[in-house]
Image 1: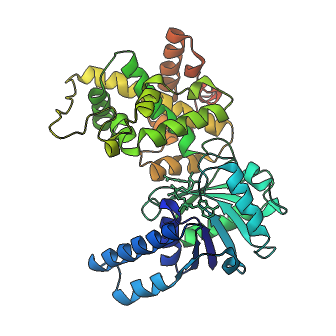
Image 2: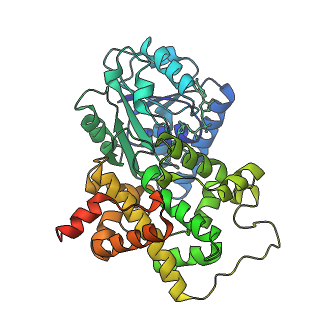
Image 3: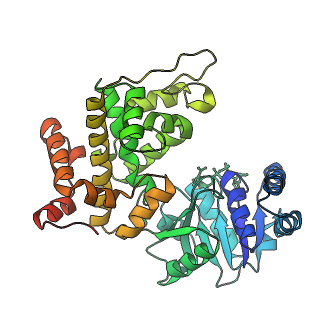
Length: 384
Ligand SMILES: NC(=O)c1ccc[n+]([C@@H]2O[C@H](COP(=O)([O-])OP(=O)(O)OC[C@H]3O[C@@H](n4cnc5c(N)ncnc54)[C@H](O)[C@@H]3O)[C@@H](O)[C@H]2O)c1
């Protein structure tokens, strides 16, 4: 396929690599000549490294690299079958780009956005043919993360999501289809991993290192929530939390925390800035987790119940199928198990009792148990 990518930043260049490796002819476009040059150099060096590691033959790598065309005008994109936009996260700018594209591409070219937080409906609304607009959400780094969320908007023609799913599978990805709701699957369902951990910290129940240890040792997560937030960066993670909260009409379930907001305001972005929840400066002493297995169990159960509840509620509201919800969390954020399978394994009565005990204690809507869980318990059923 002849595929164009708009924006040659972190995501655009990663997506270009994925598509070129899968034998597509790729046109990478950026308004900034320096960004395009940077992408070219970074892709060249990536392919050299793949050759050095023995993952590609030199000739194969050269052919793949030759399949990527770095272009400075959108006229070069006229006969593409698909365009994937990966520019700055700004609705007005994205809408303008989609309008410019429509004046250049053929009438049956599919227009996709890689947006993380904007609705696909709002982007499509700027187009003359909104029925060909869809979301194709890759995860960072695109060449390494298998998950792709496919998001048909209310305007998208029926059947297009399934066509895009077939394409994404041919690119070696694991595609899931999700409704056009805030955070799609991953950025919605994963919120409690961060927010409940911060809440436990704020209440003084445990420190960062202890909470991290509970989630890695008992939960089997690759990284604890504080290590992960510091790794993602609070500039990114806080903004996503705030955007999901606002987009959900301020549902208390997604409420951001002042603790993280202050880190963001202070410029303590995490690992990349040398300080976040942890201090990464030279000579800093690493926090030590408290050795308390009973406390680990309490922390783990509380955060896991919140995560499973979020996944169950997404299923209750038909955001995606049960299979896609589980694939999204294992392949998009590397959770050790799909959250719905985890609910089946842990027992829905346990999840419900955990949620209800928190609700009874706090009287906060944030801890409301999804009706889907109550129905499962009443009917003595499981999800699978
Ligand atoms: N970074 C992530 O982790 C991540 C993950 C998934 C999705 N996304 C989404 O992908 C998109 C891109 O994110 P990124 O991190 O790659 O950004 P980035 O800042 O690294 O790159 C954006 C690129 O777009 C170019 N650009 C800006 N306006 C343009 C225009 N009008 N026409 C053509 N090019 C233009 C810029 O010059 C820049 O090179 C955003 O919508 C973001 O929400 C990001």
